[in-house]
Image (tube, rainbow, N blue to C red; front, side, top):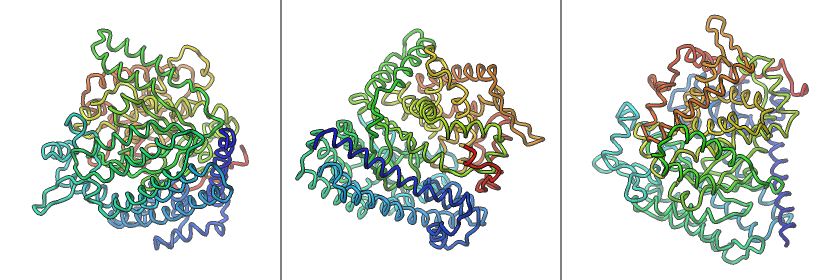
Length: 625
């Protein structure tokens, strides 16, 4: 098989997955057109949960199955007066339904490849191997969530009352994993377990989830054996894949908690050497666990779109911005080591544009629209990072989602009509805006950090709560300060996208796993309100959107100044909460804006989200676009 033939096969698989996603997205269409007889799968879902169907539940279940998000389901369950324990049980039952549905969905993809003899035997074996490991990861996910999120973390906060005291307790009692150079690690591959004295100790995943991890290891060993018996005659990366799979076996098998970070760094090193269009994703992120950053059970194949692999300009634009901002905020060059570290990482990025082909485990609780990894900065210093961006997936999903009353009530039809015309009629520019905002976000993560930044700034467990804003704003500031003007025609669309993002993130107020994005939204809102791009009238409950040249000019200045302030905070490695508290302060369980007017808006929006967040807007139709 030639490289060209292989690329043609990759395109066929890519198109097949795209068409399959169109089919599942039709569930949204059936919702919008009240063709409930075609929503039999959703009726089965409700029966699985043993809950009587309502209009709001139907919308929430379609969201859970198609978009893999459970925030709307949680709100519907709360509205049905389910207590916290009942919600946890039902959310887990929903996970198993979604897991089983998507597992069958992925099995169909495997059968399509097999039946049509696509790819090479080696890469067919990679799809099958990832699938078989994924089955075990998805079974393990339920126990992982039960123990870490719903048991240990709830116990920690109820015992110690504040995040800061939880972190102090964990550090004082040596309950973090040990990282490089015997320092406290910024993430964990272990779990807290109570011993006979009712005191916590940390145990490796292999010890804490013995059966589940053994099953994953068995599947990985079969995977490795199958690859050894085949040849990669397309990219000649057989041994890179084999070494990667074997490094995963070693890491999952390790029981010494002071060696876990070391062996998982070896996984990342092996993984960075794989440069084909078929990329395997392993446990990399740790948003779900607020305290010890236990790494989540990601497992997937990301398939690159062969037609998209061209030079991307985003890295060079961020580099120009980064150099200018650094010159302004550190004229004495005292933080050059951090600057050099970031710049080297930026220059080593591998960029993959495509879509998820198979996914399992934690990813049945939501897929990322883009990702920059690995998070191990020691590895990144050596090898750089990989950025994955799924613009086709996001465009397809955004076009499929139904129009909601809440959007119309808050944003107004004029704003929505302009935004929807752009979404449905201007594909090329939509992809450019995605590149600026989302791929720019991923490059933005790389800046202002070295290998110890996160651990030093995370003493209050709030590093991620400013890091997401830093990432997005890096992309925005590089766009706003770009003197080439080759993208300036997209300015209003970028601002509109930022408005939608900032407001849309409010719905995650009560979802701890995605608190960093909610906090990001609150900081964006500070700028949008301060510059009067958004104006909220509490008496009339009306939001005014003003994207005049003057307000956008003010907003650009606000972002540049705010980003410079944040970059200085990073260079000094001050605790994240200090900076976050300029914009948001935790009141009881949740962060709320320090500005009273913005706080009023946020509370009103969240109240309306709970009341009408699942109601469809029939005053507008996709036929208009």
